[in-house]
Length: 138
Image 1 (spheres, rainbow, N blue to C red):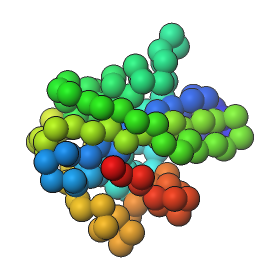
Image 2: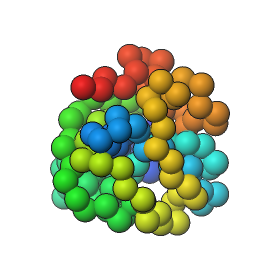
Image 3: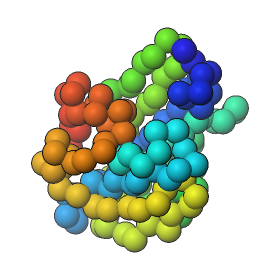
Image 4: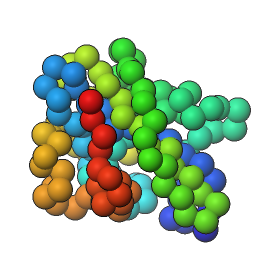
């Protein structure tokens, strides 16, 4: 699979951002310009040449949300498909913020983690994570 139209590159990283003040998770609605458009997902994307996983993750958070505040990153279960690897993380932020979305996402909402199982139109990667142990939150 790897570098197929389904994935960008061979390796990617993403984070489910969790606000410490509320315990809620940020979901973003992917735009028409992305793979899996109009699905709710976490923040993430391809790892650029020369980047490590955490550098890529922090860059994606900045690019997609314009967030550069405190971010405590904890790796969780990775998704594997052929040679492609998606490194999932929990990213703790001190408090909910209003994301300044780029072209990749049309909307961002903070939701209670228990709502995720019933959330409509989830990205297949989110569904996979929920089906394989869920979000291991502190």
